[in-house]
Each structure stands twice: as structure tokens, then as C-alpha cells.
Length: 154
Image (cartoon, rainbow, N blue to C red; front, side, top):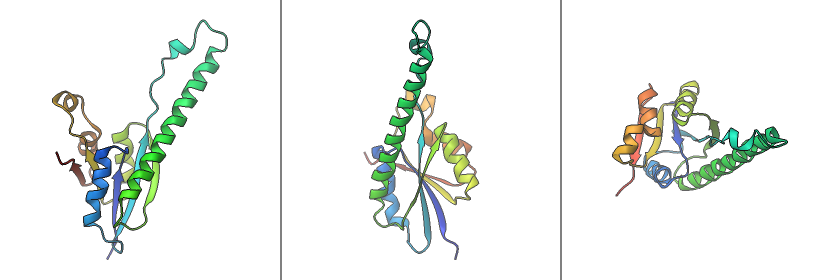
């Protein structure tokens, strides 16, 4: 019997940690392979505020970008570590840090690595948040692979 390949997407949020805990009840170490993925997105930095009238402004911009990237990498590693700790009933997991638009990165990785099911938590956005979309909604819209969305208990 082929092992079921799962991709658990995490950002370290309570909903992601809840999805990991939920997943424990459905996995069998002998028949499941889990990849734990997080996506690094570097926040936009105001190029005008860091360039222009000042000497070495291009260097300041590069430094600001590098600092933002390093901070995003630290947050990603923390998310992976904390989520992996919640997978108590699972086989050893593989971790991966992706970059770019979170929904696109998750779907692209899952498709290129022949994942059977994508699992992720859902924060439960407000109506306004749903209007602008969420990562889980974006994954559902783009993926041809089955997606399980685990909602937080309220």
C-alpha cells in the first residue's frame, strides 16, 4: 500500500497549530508521509523612504530588505518548529520553507511533489476579510489536489 502524502501548511498561528493537533487523530506512521510547509513573504518596504535624498540610500534600502527577509526567515523557522511539536502521533516530518504568494506557493509545491492532500487551518476571517480573501480560500480556488481546511473550535 502506497503511503498517503500530506502537506500541512503552517504559519505558526493558533489555527495552524490546531490543524496539526487535529491531524494526529487521522495519521498512521506506517502509511503517512507528512511535509510541513511555511511560506516566507517579505513585507513591502517603502523604497522612497529609504532612498532618494540621502547618501548611500540604495544601501539603506538593501539593508532594510535583508533585515526584513532575515526576520521573515526566523518567523518561518519558529512556525515550523512549533507546528512540528504538535504532531505527536505522526511519523517524522519533512519541513520546507517556500517563498512568494502563500496560496500559489502551497499549491505549486503540492502539485510538483505529488502530494495527495493539503491540510491547513483557517482563521475564520470576518466578512471583510473574506471579501479580500484568505490563504485557505486561495488554496481551495487554485488546487486540483484535495484540500482539508480545519476550522478553529469556537
